[in-house]
Amino acid sequence: MANRVYNFSAGPAVLPEKVLQQAADEMLDYQGCGMSVMELSHRSTIYQKIIDDAEAGLRKLMDIPENYKVLFLQGGASLQFLMVPMNLGINKKADFVNTGEWSTKAIKEAKKFGMDVNVVATSEDTTFNTFPEIDAGKIRKDADYFHITSNNTIYGTKCMNVPKLDIPVVADMSSNIMSEKFDVRDYGIIYAGAQKNIGPAGVVIVIIREDLVGKISGIPTMLDYKTHVDKGSMFNTPPTYGIYIAKLVFDHMLSMGGVAYYEELNKKKAALIYDAIDNSKLFKAHVKPGKDRSLMNIPFFTDSDEINKKFLKEAEANGLVTLKGHRSVGGMRASVYNAMPIEGCQKLADFIKKFDQENS
Image 1 (tube, rainbow, N blue to C red):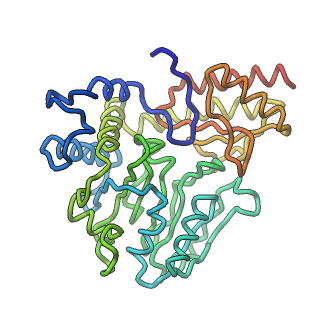
Image 2: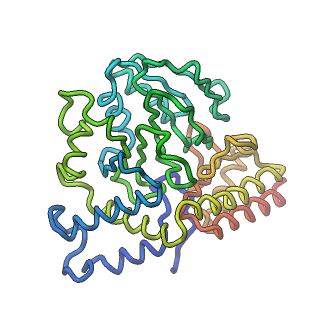
């Protein structure tokens, strides 16, 4: 496709070209109905099939058990920072791992709601360059839930091994959902903004165990999970087009071999870039080699702001775009979500090596 660049944006992020092409082909007339999906009533049988198929695809990809509900909501992960304590906070106690900006914001919202927050582990003292070890003994048995951000978009750390607890484990998986295999049964709630591995901005996926629905009464209608479970994500008009794109992404992922295929591919993609950084003279990764390194987000930098700027400028000229790091870390960041082709990672790795040789 002409003029396509390799887009390393942290989100909204790259989507599979086949999905974009199919959406383009169906833009004016979805499967012979004479309308675009954007024009379809969410109450129509045509749209009901789209959202049903989207849920079925996600359930198959993630092996979601029958006793979990799948919701397509709005408000992003940021609204879930409030909805989780509002729906689970019977004892008004929540335990957290603090691993960066997004977990910090989730902690802040829980406190605003009046939760007694206990931070059981943090890596703040080292600028979140590791995922802190979780001591299950520090997690309160009477906490309403234990919250973890499984992948840290800004700092580039991850953890998919959660402790087995008698309280619900809640995970923000916005930036690594479906990037590798894990057991949904280890979690009470999983939520993820769509704009990284699922589709366009505007949709948030919530996967919630049935027994956690309707625990507290009197919650404002739109903030109550039960409202959306009872109405099949159709209490009000859902983000219909975003859900349609998500369905196409799920279909595409299944056709490629599902999450197992992407996990293997993602490991190869990340290794290409990490190896180029680790074997260079100029560049350093924010996260040291080991199990903590994200497969999705790779922050790296040089010791010179001037050289960082030169790298970004020359990378963009070579079709490698949106590599600027988050302001809290600086330098560069390569976000290599599921839809980033391995060719893009290889091109970036080659460019890192070339730039290193020319500027060392």
